[in-house]
Image 1 (cartoon, rainbow, N blue to C red):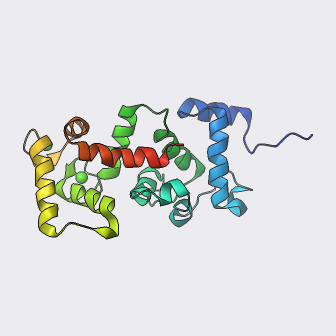
Image 2: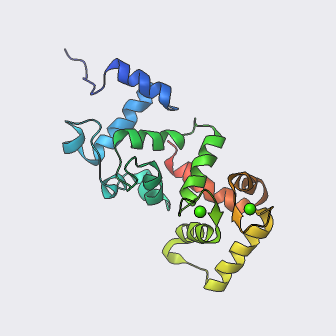
Image 3: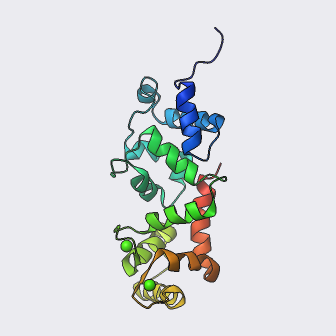
Length: 190
Ligand SMILES: [Ca+2]
Ligand SMILES: [Ca+2]
């Protein structure tokens, strides 16, 4: 009596703590955020699936140029709709406590728009377009040159696509790319 009731059992919280980079308390904070997006649904089903447009109302995602793409990557139904568990995974991977290599792996998946496990010219163009948004300062030639420059720097085996290993070098060699990744890290970090 008088105690705030949780929608989770102790076992569930222990499991989430083991499976994420969050403490139990942080799991509950994440759930409060998830619930605030659709209290009527999540209030009686803690793991209710929310439509992509609801999830994107989270300020951290709304402000992120890759918000929609991130939801798609973490969505267990692969359409961007997220259950709490999908949402928790996403928040956890981009939290401050998640290791850099885990973040890099997921950034790679987010950038790999066509899902072929390589970052091709088309993927990198989309990444740049997401970043510059509607204020696009590049014409087609600028964009082409920029992509060319990136590939000259980091496509070590000259196969016209970046593998994950090549992508890992990007952060060292090309400061602009570091910025891209930091955008994601910072806007979701909390
Ligand atoms: Ca690809
Ligand atoms: Ca390559």
